[in-house]
Amino acid sequence: MAQRRALVVRGGWEGHQPVKATELFLPFLERSGYAVRVEESTEIYADAAEMAETDLVVQCMTMSQITRDQVAGLSAAVIAGTGFTGWHGGIVDSFRASSDYLHLVGGQFATHPGLAPCERHGGEEDNFLPHTVRVTDLGREHPITAGIEDFDLVTEQYWVLHDDLIDVLAVITHPTQAWHPWHRPVTSPAIWTRRWGAGRIVVTTPGHSLDVLEHPGVRTVIERGMVWATRTASAS
Image (cartoon, rainbow, N blue to C red; front, side, top):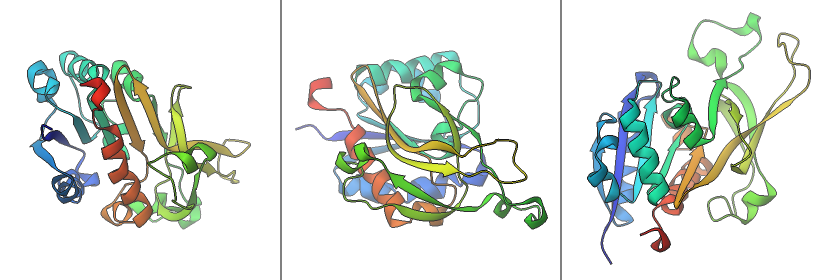
């Protein structure tokens, strides 16, 4: 069997530490038998020959810009069977101006509610809220999340806008608070998969900082998601 090829694409907003964050997972990929290539921009997405030989794309590229040719190349690769995965803003707060990218991923970061105004001090911790990641019934049977119990985090809690073509493996709930404009609790997907053509997509929304990525539940989901998303024999 030919060695599987993983492409790690990283960059964008430095607050998500794209280099250090992706470095956490390179040893796992290498131990799992992948030949790993790391790129610091999305230019490679427009290289059809390289993308056709790529079995898995791991993206950590918050905000940033992408060209039409690049997003078309990424989408074509996924449709042809290349897996696509990532976490937090590196996949669901990427390329805000590209509706084609949003259509590919199936969900987009909208906000992360914060603490009460009187408790804020102007730092990123203003948006760190205690919350529970709850595995769905589907998630309890899925190979990415099977055996993982609900777990608690204190970090950014992503509110995600999404469509119906995602398979939700875990959710979080935003409660109502006196300082918020919404009037009932809102549940957002926290972990989901998406079938797109012959390709598989996995999104994990926790992952704002290195300590969150090292949480056993989060790290396990991301690593299993990489394996599950990888091009399958039927898509070769």
